[in-house]
Picture 1 (tube, rainbow, N blue to C red):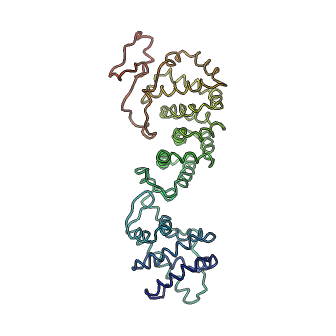
Picture 2 (picture 1 turned 45 degrees about the horizontal axis):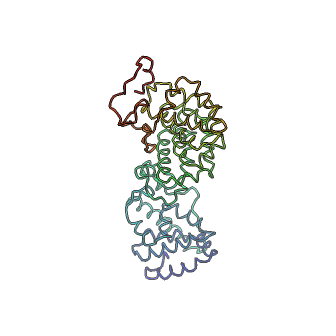
Picture 3 (picture 1 turned 180 degrees about the vertical axis):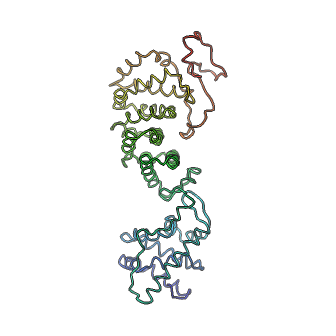
Length: 418
């Protein structure tokens, strides 16, 4: 390939394409350095038909069931993995992709990166070619530590080949491997919860939540991975800074029935209750999370809530002015609905009701409807400044601009949600 004139290369590539149906020949070719010769043509040749045929040959090697994964790893040491997928799907498109500039969640590729890859591949190929001229049987391998750091562009955070900065601005991007992205995000979140890089943790957490919002079906795959238990365990053993990713995650997956079933079969309420107390700035999100969780009517979760003291603390929220909490009305509305859901338990409902009846504040809320105060909006918006505020004591008419009249201002002043 290296020494042949261009007009003979296409015929040789056709021959190789046929030969690489044999696993033994694919292995021998890989061990002798065929990949670097092919990459040199793909990256540096000026003839599009030859480059396209080279992409076909490389994809044929990658598709070998035994040796293919090793070939893919070798190619990915020089090129981002998205190029290998493009070679398999459309060789012509893979050439066009290499020659173009891209900035999307799965690829940042420009003239600088393209020239860098072409130069490194050409140098590596030339070194091997000189060795093969002396001894054609010389083997070739690339060091395990060798990797062109193409993903490390300007300090970009990359997870499973996805550039997070670009992903959060375009979470609807159709990912090639969403499940792999989800699992590697979960792994990175756990690592950051233990190590404490807050800036990166914010970005990774935001990416995780936006992924689950954009592709809600992915949440159904979480129970099989074991990450739910791992996150709960980490939350239980870490301080305030590690709680935010967990609260946001469980607030999101509490929409998923199978995820809540996993939570019902492990000790989940105690670490979430602890997180709520540590992160008072996230009280609205925590209360909505519990409301969602209890909506599935799992008796084990009611039992955990009673034993951990969560019911008493939720009542405490109703009795508090929540001076430093945004959107107080929505927060208390979520608490009321959560407590009513706990009361529905056939096993522990009476015990919950007894606690509620013993509270001085419960009677002020139990007969009121709170649907108007619960906004249907994405989780990431919950941390923003609220645009409206309501009162739990208002009627079901249009929202007034001032509080409704209060019969006894002296005794009820502390219950106004201003």
